[in-house]
Amino acid sequence: MLQTEKANREQNREQNREQNREHAYSEKHDWMSQVKVLEERLEAARDKLVQSQAAVSSLTEQLQRTERTAAQVAQQVSVEHDKTKVSKVQLSTF
Image (tube, rainbow, N blue to C red; front, side):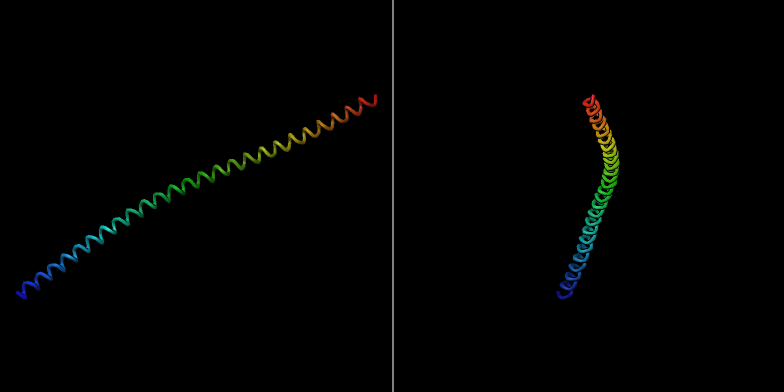
């Protein structure tokens, strides 16, 4: 009887070890799957960041061009305004 109990305990230990190995493998597989998903998300986020940076750069260039054009228009308006003043002064002197 003692021999049978000893054999049963050993068999139980071996079954527990096997279950632990299976559980550890399953856990490792789950973690690896999660890591892969996170790596894919990170790569997608990097791609979006690069696209966003390119868009910001393009918009910045466009804004700078618009600002230069606005400054040129403002200067032209100022010159035209000054010419109008001069014309009015000339007309009033007649």
